[in-house]
Image (cartoon, rainbow, N blue to C red; front, top):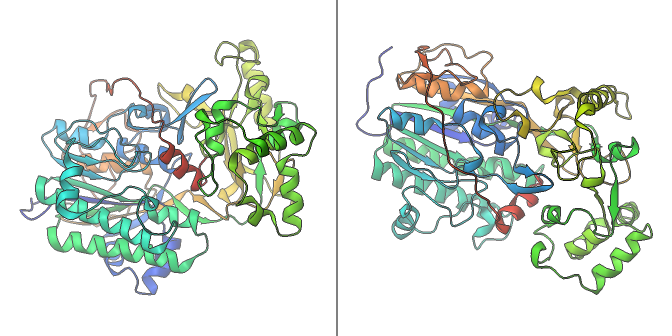
Length: 540
């Protein structure tokens, strides 16, 4: 298979669509809304791309660009935990080598734009502007490149709400997509890379922020299609891959409140009146509601009153249920400060509990183990027995309609392998076909209507077209296969630690052991905008 080099653009262009899947794109293709994406999907080879567990952005993109499972690269969720404290993950939490750094070691240059969990940028031969979980003033590579871009082509943003347009507006989405494409093309012109990778995040966030809004989804995809078309027309890459990290679709069944179940079965204790772990309070902030920074906040009269009421059993969960019955929960909730909502809520008492869900998007339960957690309650010699009992109990759970809640439940070692397995949840819980939803908040009821009507699914997509790709079916393609396929395309030996393998559209190539990857010490994110953005999208 000969792969001629191109003098016009990158040898390989990788376009990432967060949450891209055929169930979303096919209707847009039929309507003629995305002719460029249609051409990429139909001109070469395309297939479903199976995502990982958990199929969420912050863990899945590192798996895609390292070719390794979370147990090897170390990112299981949007959050990293140390004891009962947490921080939003960033590039320093990714403990495996990104494919563009591997290519750099073999003499290939790259341009990478908007890929999640890549801030702060590391040095390699090329340029990188980080994506989701980065602040709006990210550390780029080279360090001054974003200032240069904004001088030449205008403002750049990572998050739509950072612009002047109304929050969640279609125009804000469009402008974000447009500045993404413009910055990417500027870097292609300046660096003339061999490999180029641009990711579009709003193809996912539009479903979280405007669920069921077909006009908004169409507008976002049309904007992405135009930017991809402009890039192809101006730079004529030798080959193109289109990939996604997971799919998305409606939640057709109930949501299951895991922490309510754990409380009912004696594993978990709760507190009222805002007395849960204070370092968890940031995740309860909502940028739709007013509120001050959690670390600097002093309770006001309303918050103190609600806190006192909560201690006597009048919690905001109970009030919300009553308001919802008469249709007032949402309008009143939008006018209450978030600190007052928290003060009147029940929160998990992490140190006093045996097991709890810290974050719904890591799809698992953590045990509070002695000598591992600061105030552990589960003796190490009982760890396996408690975990096994919990797995058995969860496996047998059914919804009110009699269907299994979970597709599978098991110890983390059943789903992950590698040196960082212990950073993941102790018990992994996979919702049945992701048609049931898992939530961490305490409500007083085990089941209810999903608060988020759309959820991630396991089936994403992949397409490969152009010089260097064979017309070979990509059956059983997996997220982990993308990085090895990129390596094989460039005749770079695949890291033997990668969990995937080159797809049949390229020659299989060779594998080899690489030196241990040392990204340096982890650093904190600690950025309110990032936390608010994740909360707004429903990830916190």
